[in-house]
Image 1 (cartoon, helix red, strand yellow):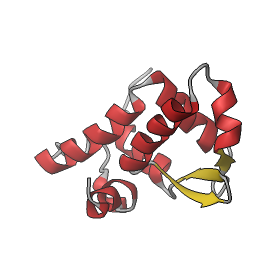
Image 2 (cartoon, helix red, strand yellow):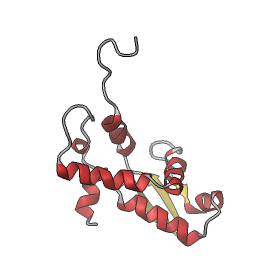
Image 3 (tube, one colour):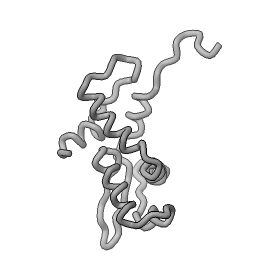
Length: 124
């Protein structure tokens, strides 16, 4: 996946219209499918949750993530790589450790895409 594709998913605020605003185009659907595929694995979903729970601008060391799973370190690294490739997180190596954080606005854009306005009188 090219850097340009990652920017489309993780950095372009216009990539994720509200679900009910208009039907998705073919390219938008393909890009969003990559994101949802990455989140479709329970381990990756937990990793994303652990990283996102640090709040905006927060980061977590891989040394804190690995012990939470009954998986090898290379397997955890593989899952983190897939989350990075989907444009959800980024990382930085500092010495022997790697620190991860959620890319700015990613969760807001996913939430906006999934949020459909309620029709008048719904739920009444």
